[in-house]
Length: 206
Image (cartoon, rainbow, N blue to C red):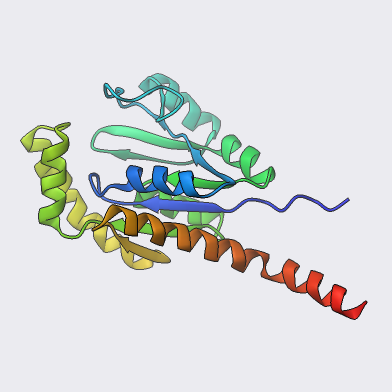
């Protein structure tokens, strides 16, 4: 019996406010076989967030215990809060042949790459820092001081996009979703190239 092909891991990073969540939801509506990896965080939930869907919200004590047990594929501290990806969750889904999307920052991406150099790295850029600022103000989730801090962090974070495989500028949402979809489809084709060629050659030799 042929073994099930392991799923791929797509890491998507972006400055806060670049529209990453919207793009991920959009592409998951268009493609099957994709699952969003729900991270663990010590951050308090926002009014529109649900535990187990947007994040697994845990206490700092629980998060620290998970670190000490080696439960995380990666974890990082961002703006005073911790975020981490469950190793067992990733193993479970990819072993079932499901392609996983990890919404993590550049710190976490580096940790994952050290353990698995086959991951696909995608960075989402805002059209400009001015546009990013406008989006952060418009969504109304942060104080002006926090927005300034996010913009400062964004300038440094964008420098890390140089070592990602793909960079997508989120200027028009639908166009950006289509580009993200194209990347995932292309990577799936690349991964299946060997098995497809072998199957076709076998048919043609019959």
